[in-house]
Every structure is written in structure tokens, then in C-alpha cells.
Length: 257
Ligand code: COA
Image (spheres, rainbow, N blue to C red):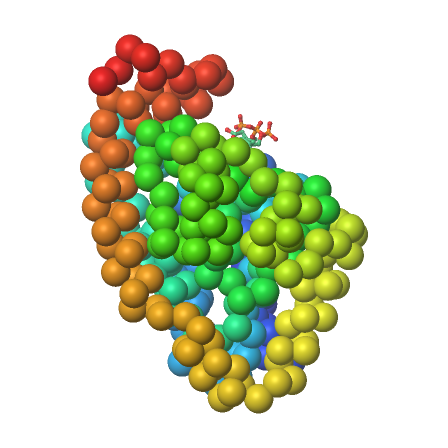
């Protein structure tokens, strides 16, 4: 449902994108990815949009991809998301400054999208996690490249392979975030940073980002990951992971090959 992503632009050209499905912990559906991709895409051709700020409503930033939609692919009932690729590629190619304001949990793509943000503000209760392997999947959104580059192979491998959660304090120390603030200051801090960026010369910001990030190399990594991801989604391991989530029990991978 597209109303699960809300978009608002203020007079200073700050486009705030809110994940608004709090009853499902802002889990991302194909329709939500579609609206996110369209929003970022149209911001690119609108000179009055100077900064994009992404946030989540409720007690969590996002619990990641909707597990029900993953399960539908794993059981052969769906072909898979049409829009997730468009969304992550729009992040990689976004020329405007991207800021994230994150509270509670950021799971899966909730964490990997932060690697594409230029400034990340965390509430002090935040836990980041990328439990792709625990779901019998592989990392996406170019995180297999960006995460080890950002925090080192040892930490990245633990996050991916063991699904380790990372506290806000560790995320700050490891360079995954710029600021950690009390929860009640989160939106104000992110907005203050957005206002500062909106006052900077837009051309110089765009040129700086282009020098710092190679969008096309990231998209190439996304495509390689996407092939593996699509294959893994259709395995017996993945069916066990999603069935276990639906049945609210731990998965048992010892009986599937
Ligand atoms: N996809 C679909 N629904 C999700 C979801 C997801 N990723 N994450 C949470 N939900 C739903 C739950 O099924 C529940 O729905 P219900 O009220 O209809 O039963 C609701 O959101 C609340 O979630 P709940 O698990 O009760 O909240 P919690 O605070 O106890 O735990 C999480 C929050 C994020 C730790 C937990 O929901 C979780 O592990 N979610 C799955 C995360 C995940 O694996 N994402 C994919 C990453 S690739």
C-alpha cells in the first residue's frame, strides 16, 4: 500500500520520507519499495529538492523486507518483488544528500540502506542487524561490498553470518553512524543536519558525493548479489526460515540440505 510511505517537502527543500506501517514494524512491501523508488527518482529531477531525509514511524525504523512476501516467493506463490531492485538502485544513484533518522530496530535492508545514506543519526536505543544468512539468504543492496569496506571484514562477517546485532554505541564507533542522540531528540537532530546541508551549495554537494561514491560499481554489485539472493529465496533452507518465522519458532536447518 502506497500510504505506508509518506512524503512531505518543507519550504527549505527537505524531502522527508516516512516509513509508515508501524503495526508491522515498518516491514517493507513491494508497493512500499515502489513508492520509495518513485520518490527518490522524481526528487532527482526536481531542483527544489535539496536533501532527502528518511525516517520510520513508531518504535522501529524498519524490520526489513516483509517476511510474508519472502515466504510467498520461497513457496512458489509469487515471482518476487518487482520494485526492491529499483529502490536500492535509486539509493546507489541518488545524487542528493541522503540522511537517515533511525530508532529501535533496523533489520536487513533497514541497515543496508544506511550504507547509502550520507549522514546517519541513531537514537540511543537502536539495534542494527543484517540476519540474511539466518534467513538462508545473502547480503543485498551492495552491502557485501560496502559493509566490510566500512567496518572491516571481521565485524561485517559476524553481522552477516551470525546475524549479530550492533548497538548504537558500537555503530557510532565503527563508522556506521554520525550521531547517537536520545530518542526524543532524534527527529530534531536529523532535521537540523538536513537544514545545514540544505543551506550548502547544492552543486558542490552533488560533485562531492559523486567523487566519494561510485554508483555504477554499487549497482553492479547489487546485480551480482541479486542473482544469488533470488536463487537462495527458492531453497528448502529459505522455506524453513520463513515457515519458522510464521510459526514463531526457531528454524531448524539441520534437516534441510
Ligand atoms: N515482515 C512481516 N511482518 C513483520 C516483520 C517482517 N519483517 N517484522 C515484524 N512483523 C510483524 C509481526 O509478524 C507482527 O505482526 P502481527 O502483530 O500481525 O503478529 C508485528 O509485525 C509485530 O512484530 P513482533 O515480532 O511482534 O515485534 P517485536 O517487537 O517482538 O519484534 C522484530 C520485532 C523486528 C525483532 C521481529 O518482528 C523480527 O525479527 N522481525 C523479522 C525481521 C526480519 O527477519 N526481517 C527480514 C530481514 S532480511
